[in-house]
Length: 389
Image (cartoon, rainbow, N blue to C red; front, top):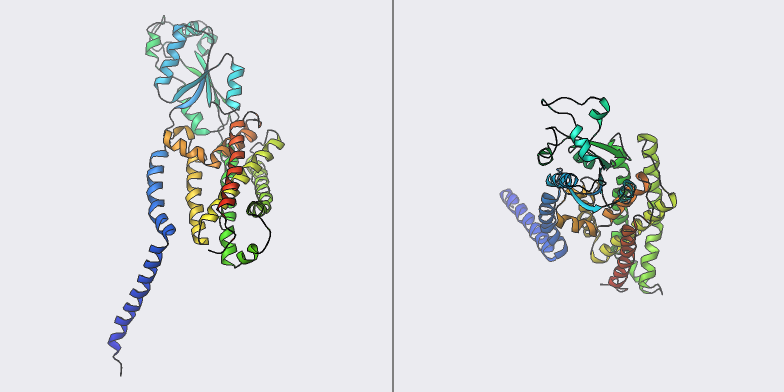
């Protein structure tokens, strides 16, 4: 009769044998083993440095209608806060509004021709005699016009509304604290939904489009359909294009649902040219689907395809400007963000929906997405092999 005391020991041996087999299989599966190590490592380093709610170096334009030493000192002191960085000097407020609309800058500082006089008449704090008229008291030294669609950017600029401009005050007739007028464009109420809803289009399309196609080639192999494809005259590029076409319509439907419900439930305005909106969305859908096909040609199983999708999805959420301002990231994180299709679409969808921008004004992002589609499909077609591995 067998001793029952040996049963637990034999059970442990069998468990250890299965454990050893799974460990050996994981070790042979280099893709999965590499992602187990690299996903937490890369994302910890990347997001630890990239995620920053203290927005700095916001690109702004300056319209200096005074061209005096006081106005130049004013610009220098504003830049010294490190909240903003002057990237353009424009001649008129209208040019500044166009720069904001095209997303070249996020705000503009308008310095009037009579800035010296306004500074002299600004209200004193505890010193001197107050101005004689309420008009003089209420007149700001200069004006900020801000893209208010991003509430974090708007809040950062509003923090510059009142500044102790000591360098200028030495040159001014009285000692005062000048104020700036802040005008918020596109979202004066600073409602978060106005910024989030258009961004959700990019995030949901990124998730669904890449997920749909990242397992496309792997699924054919696992279902045994690869043998049938080998015996057909279908060329690799034809296969890639044929696989993404159905999902293009799905993506457009998702876009219309999100924006339609956003307008109905949260009163998010849908402005701009609808043809430009559909064209830009088509380019982004094509870029996401082609990226998914490239991942599908790299994956050996649907599990690996899912892991790769997550590896792309998380940076798209955190680095594209959806959750955190792009301007608050370090330069290296911005370079990584520029590679992601979601970053370019985030600028486009918010420009189309909120700022009434067109394809011509956002041409850099349009051209980048179009190039990504062509390169992505070409790489996927070249990597695809019409043979069983």
